[in-house]
Image (cartoon, rainbow, N blue to C red):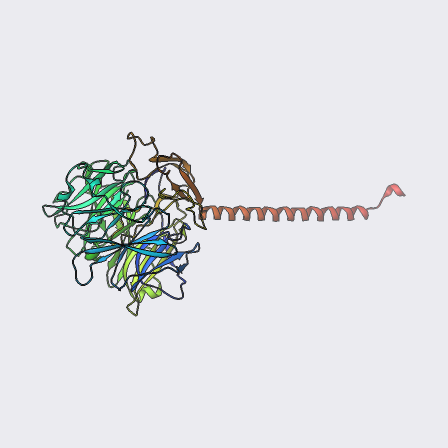
Length: 573
């Protein structure tokens, strides 16, 4: 997702009711292992990519939340588990897929292949390199075409630029502006990220490095469309006292305190398995310090994550739609269940943080019957029907020990409002619309694309129960900021007075152009529907009253005429 900031007036707490909805109708169960999210058919509905043994399948979501299998599968050659990322690697606006997996036959490292969709089929382009970890998808040179970044097995940087021809060119020299990146020792299974952490709406690249056997995050800042420099001042070192165990879960990026700048969250684990997490070390750019966001309610339970998949313990989303991002985690009690950790104010915190994460115990997430009979392996946020309310996607082993996917649909959220924003790239500016939409743009850039981070391809801002208009929205595209100003050049876009419950689609200009495209789609809230029903009811009642009074008046007139006709006329005598 691209980076933006939103200002809105106020927020309120709410209660969420979750009910079961089986939204999958693909000749039975949806079998397989979730691999990635993306709008593969460009109809503005998020689709899912699933690995079913040795095949990679795409399932299109319809407007009513049902899924249908696409006709184009990818043959993986084996049933070995893979990780996927969606991008546009040749700039034709058609989504392509990056597939990463461990080297076969017991080899050390990873290998990656880009599958470019062309002429109704996927064409494999192997990236001939033995990699230390999975490759991340980023836009390195700001041209809107997806690139890949990672590290080789010898810890040297690996960078490849996508192009309109489908060929990849090296870009390691983009990182020699300052410092020597060849001295970097990558931190094992760190989710290298592409996200704005200083509020200038231009994304930085976050590498996880190992210094003195501890994690040190490096932030590389764009200084031109072809040069990046290391900025030591963007992220301070985390002290050893903040996490004495030196074990961390996957890094999190979100504006957890709603101050307009993305925070960096590092879950501090009790051991290498990350079964226990009591605090998340949070980097706050505005105050320039690390804070401790404590977690309550998990004292007697274990968290579930996989070390070889980056220890992704938590996934982020504004589930309660109050403007403060929440977390979802898989918690092991007697069985493994998805749990929501709500981002709530902390009035009695001893630390310097003003918020904490609290386990939501009521109402619980009610699992579908097939899921409850199996064992859940993964939980993530997902927006069925694109209605602005986050649902829960579950990957589980069914009774036959086969992988499957199902959903917990959460619709009733107390009539809260939201703003959903998607910013596409501008790599293709002609003949790029699909049959369902004329938006001329390509895929969304997501902050993390490795180890099944499963970020949703949009930014969702909860507005609470406020019916007020959103004051303004600032949007940035992946190119160098000009003159350091938020309103100068074509890197930023500015919108005012956005209606709540809206979905905003934005495409930046191509090259040096200045004209941005934007579309606004309004989702009627329950309040509007209820108000309409009340208005109709009042009108019907008033109509009935008018009909009744009219009937009484006509009846009174009739009686008066009858009385007049039977009256004795003395004048006639």
